[in-house]
Image 1 (tube, rainbow, N blue to C red):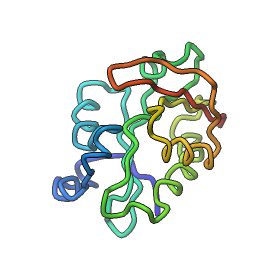
Image 2: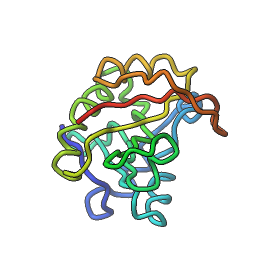
Image 3: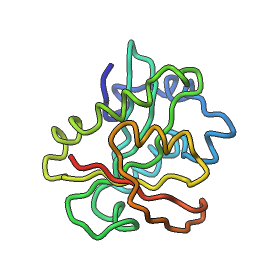
Length: 157
């Protein structure tokens, strides 16, 4: 398994079309296709996939510069957003694997970054527990957004 940055030569439209999210998942995360479209107009967004045997298991976006500023004014911070697991692969530990691989991936691809930050919907208890198990710390802070009340969590790299 590896984390792979999106590139149309590496990840096909068919693979993306086969990445399914349930209605419940879409309450908390953007689809990979939407994340890729947003990255086309915002060069500070980097869609990433956890892949295995050409299957897309997990999708996430890393967002530098302006992205993290909705949560922090610390420099050298990267925002983790649009994190999801392909519905067909849920419950198999792939989300945890992606989060455990993420710090090393960031060290290699974004060597100036020293912290990951994210906002997770306060109602998404399963995601909060997953983030805690993989090294994220609850900052005890919340922000209100159009998506609801978001809990802010960070991880030092």
